[in-house]
Length: 90
Image (cartoon, rainbow, N blue to C red; front, side):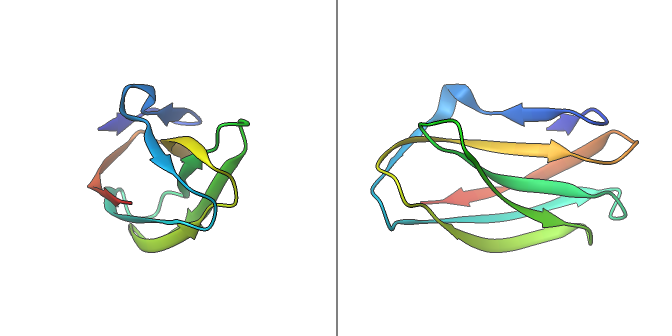
């Protein structure tokens, strides 16, 4: 997927159910590698759980503390469009 500079993309069509204490693992790469990107999930209450990445790849886990449906979200903090590819495991 391509993400414009300064924007956030949330996959609202692909929400997934989680219980409190469950883990979501994000394994992805993006280009250009120098971009600052926040990878995470949006909780049912709208809170954005994220990990900031600045090296072109992520393979990290996020533990959630609320039961409900979550949405994958990626925020491009850089001044350039980025391309992202990867997987989410839950």
